[in-house]
Length: 261
Image (cartoon, rainbow, N blue to C red):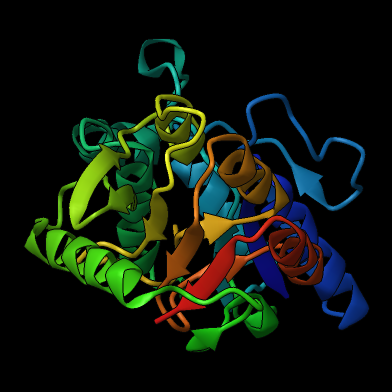
């Protein structure tokens, strides 16, 4: 029995579909904003503040592992109803929330591990979603592009573990845009229509690779076209690539390269 902590985005639905295909028994703890999984008979809507209830459910289901998938947004802490374990653990979650949504999940993982509950990678059942190093499109980055990419990698290596940045745009060996806690789409919207930049999405240093991996999908490709980007760069086996075939076909038609380094 696998426990699924699910938030928003299509990724969570892909996880469920694969687990059903594999005929795995599962249950859901729905952390989505609008009770996204309410029609699923295996879904449970539990407040993030009721850690006692969450932990009891996991043990009641005799689950030996859980995973996180989808965006879990910061709750309104002032409105949360807490049980006893929620009162005990909530201060650490509130403190983590100051560093962004991903830090909230990290805090919850630490709580679960303290309760002897194993947390596995979000792509444990979907390893095909993470691509290996190579160029996936007809168009390849030029030598000039590779110098800009190298500059971007250096930038990521200088970030500390608390920075929320997972994406930047580079051009001519300069950083054009930096992702903040509003996400990649918002960052790209600030670019000029023909930016000719390169989108780089890499995991943070010391990132917990079981969750919050840099993710792209078809909407990312459409945004790249809209703002005139030349290509996308991800880290080998440390990414989530949704709708791979659809994205590669779109990239080939629109002269966008996809490079996994």
